[in-house]
Length: 311
Image (tube, rainbow, N blue to C red; front, top):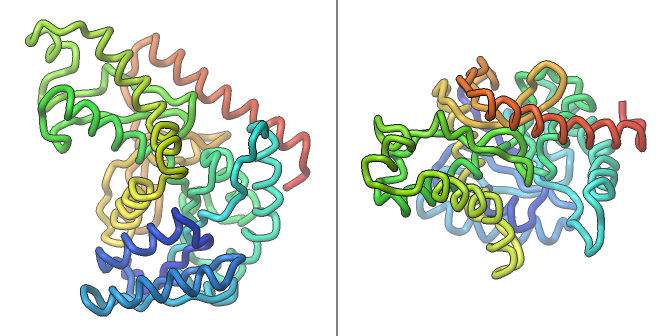
């Protein structure tokens, strides 16, 4: 698919970093930034455009919702920031209200686009976006656990002293506290983590527990130090967009529809969106953990359905 126009709705720390990452890789001829604060969108677009003239042919602009018309890909980062003492359901309710106005509008302006949701909680918000857009499920995806998987590879790379590109595996389930690592599917080169630990006389269970906690708490640690996360998620989104635009048929752990809800699992991603699901061979313990992850997503989804009539 030759994609010419990518629109990013939400020009905050994450949206603007995504725009910069896409421009730097020259993945679209036109990048449009939209934000409720139009001056913010204008400033971010101008700043990026000044650099675009030096390294790429991307035309970086800004505008209102109407400026997104005929986009090939719509990236949604817009959403409410979680307030102190606010529950997950409260945040879900506020973001659902935002999506009720936003998603039908942008979907009508770009009826043939692919919709990529980054707004948290991303697995549930992706389901809501699909329902509100009416798009087929293969064309509505979420950023899922691509970032979490990147964190897993980075942390294992440092611990095992192996290049991160030679760490193979995924974080799946939920992009959130209910995420899980199916360790039976994680490899360092051709060696399983079990065999790698045996070879080096390491405590396997201790390594797994430490890595799981570090991956799960990575965002909290960054936020405690700088107030937000933006660079790594921008690169994760860039990787997703790259797979789509270049029709790579790459396997990425995005948030995708699995029959009744959206959750984060490895899929084959190409120019039409999700082109196939990858079934991981999980052991009984991992299957139980995966089911628990999906149950948590379903419970939150059922709660928001009961509280707000959005479909």
